[in-house]
Figure 1: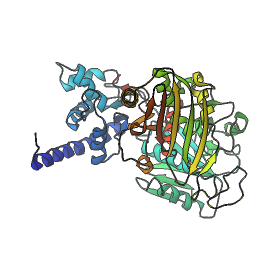
Figure 2: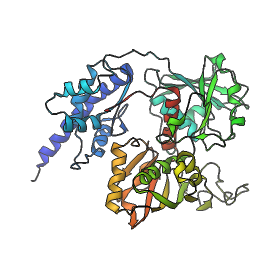
Figure 3: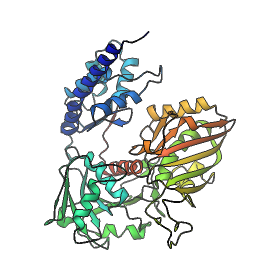
Figure 4: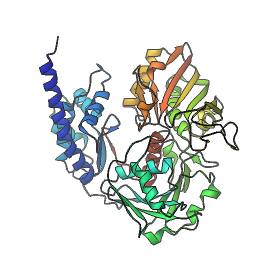
Length: 480
């Protein structure tokens, strides 16, 4: 049946109005109740009308491949506002899908009240002053961690970015640090306002006051003199990789735990979604592994759980990093001295071996290599796998798409089937990796999977998830 242009436009306008009406409700729940809303893993807090509608468009039902409508999610959101909720994470897309399947005979209000009964009326029941976080180093990952934590600051009951520690680079160091936070050639401008106080060495971003501390030695800082207590220190420098070196942070008054944003030696290497539940209160130092390990491990686990992996090879096509030279010059590493913007550079990667630290069942089954390419961000992992069970292409793709929507790994695995996507389309992806279904190859027991990943922002989101677990600020998730 042909839809008239007027009807098409009126439908769009109506959906725009509903999405617009959702924005203050989403903000109210977030700031007043510490309730974080999403649509199938895509966050809604501080999002535009168009971003909210695009999130709904992405969230297609498994049953009939139809789009989840804002007309279904808006009543659910409205019903939530009246429940005086305590802290929670609520996926409106999954709530709408569940209501369609099991909500027969119930009003939307009754269904929502039943689903969220355990947190209804619990606003302020568990008061929290939040957990202090210090960023040791303020490079690519450090600044993105800052952006994410500022965005998620809410009422200050979660992670509280209190300080960054850097070596002083110039007399106008503070101005330059703030400028790098404000402007980013890859990720665009900071969404908000930034001011500096040179007298007190602070940067204030969207109400989050960040103390800038200058130090050349991680063991010399007294965080308590800035009112920082029991802080998690995130080491973004990569200079120290073992417990002895990173333990220098724990000598500082006010520091309690350390997270390394690089593969660690002799430490628990954590890939959130896979082995984050192995972190205990006694673990004072943990590693967030590497961006590539975070990208491939969730997909490998999903494939191994259903089809079994006999062995395989991981080839990483990775954007160049700050470790490489812009033009040909001396470098202690093989080939990395050649100009990064001009060359493809074969180099080593420990990601394949590191998989076993998060997934011991794959120990010794994978080899790996890497090619650095002339792009500033977004990388790709090519998983060439031999399986225990043969897989058809459609079967494997449908399974991975379902894992991206309905599994405990939905925050780690994303999925696309667009025949037109290229690397820049994944800048800002909050997932650890995005399976490109169009590129999947299956031949009996051999499969090749292509996984895109924002090696900066997607990885930073994984680090923040670890921090939230260590701080105990992950609220219960709904629907159950």
